[in-house]
Length: 259
Image (cartoon, rainbow, N blue to C red; front, side, top):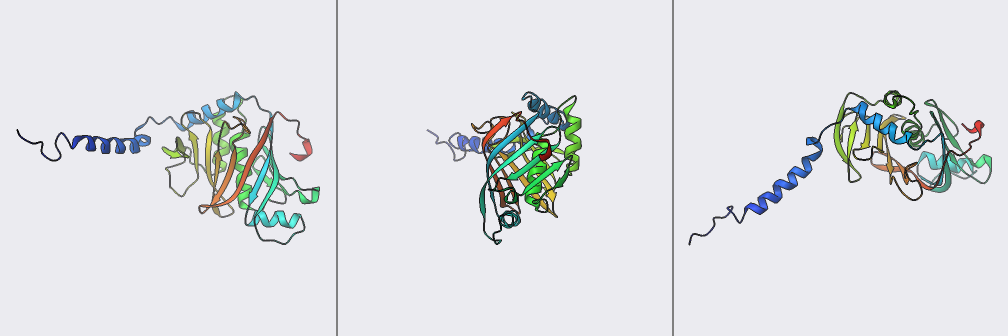
């Protein structure tokens, strides 16, 4: 009886497994690419279903570098070392957001406010803090009235996103629409989950460097669909800021003077 030759019937399962692995890796490039305007429209519809006019998110802020130094200075402490402090993020739709470090006194509570893309506050010069608040405002505080893709397009264009350039990629184990270019390109990019249309990541320049803002853990017990479990800011692959959600309150009554 003739023996099977090496690489024949007995070798085919290995080849099939290898081919399947290659095909799986190539899935993002082979899948149907929804136009960016449609992706933004779905993103807006997802937010519109929440019927939010405002949002108050309390949690903790971990910071290093310039943000930590400014928080130390507000508390009358010498610069240097990381901080882990209570903080909150306030959102008023459309286009107004605030990051507060909730210190023991008003003097110990530095903040950064974004109003229609303009920033102010004690934390304003810090690129990581500015990137966090700008990203939150662009993605979670944009008006969803009418065709949300128009409002999102304007907000993202201010962050340098090239809306006509789009691809598919992966982030945090999920397939995502990548608006603005391709993954690993050193340019402004927005990642939107392909299945849920939740915003996952916004990369944009701030303070002369690319800031990578990551929205992690949608659907958590603390933030639900209103706000992610955590928002992280990276610069040059180094974690600069992390806001961890402890509680999100929808349609909270926010003092007008704060925003």
